[in-house]
Image (cartoon, rainbow, N blue to C red; front, side):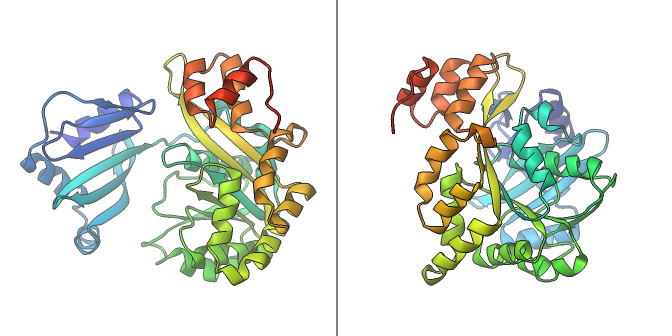
Length: 358
């Protein structure tokens, strides 16, 4: 088994992920579906050879031995960049590799909500959220927004990533990219003094704990615009997740802060295209209007969904509305869209032009 050849095939078939494990047949994820690659299971010797090759760096090897798992970027000359995760299962290594595309596409090319993405890019301060399950385009969306800023506005952008995925070249903006574990030890460490680095925009790759969330809120209150991602499925769940990072006695204060600093959210789900040419996002967009801000402040967060459903004037869109538009545009098969809907019954009614009263 030649890992370089697998990377070449991964790129040529437009696979997003490669899965390798001892005594298992290699697999690709293509258009969201996992497919077998050949019919020969990987031997222990082959897996050991690939692992040693990818962990040839002494620092990487020591980290893996200490942590039993490791996430890092691997560059294969003339092929591309890959995000590698090596972990142990049943005391043997497994590998998942994700192809990171070098080109950063525009909102239009990615079929993203242009109005809300542009609003995020033009924000002078506040908190902008991009949400969705793993592998559903969050990093790609943020990269597209940052590149839009880079092409059009003279700003200082700092990204904090684990690891760095998309590589930016300075255009109108200057962009400093810091990797957690290499350039700085942790997100809280990076955010502790970030405002002294005079950023206009800060991108936090992922928020997983109270310390990072608190530092992100503080950065927005000090005047920066902060983008970050969450592994949540919609706006309501995301706001609740943010509040629950904090101890209960601080929830009222946090909701008040969020009502003042939150600009909006984009939640993503990637669906296979009808023509078989990759995937296309369905999305939910929430813009924090005065009404939405009041609902957050008053802890009526679940009521926000109604305003998303009816907020097209402000650029808001529900998943259901997005799915139906994808079907009408001929991009997604109706059965696929129905499978991704929160309620298949509501979807079937609305596709016929019937709206259920809430």
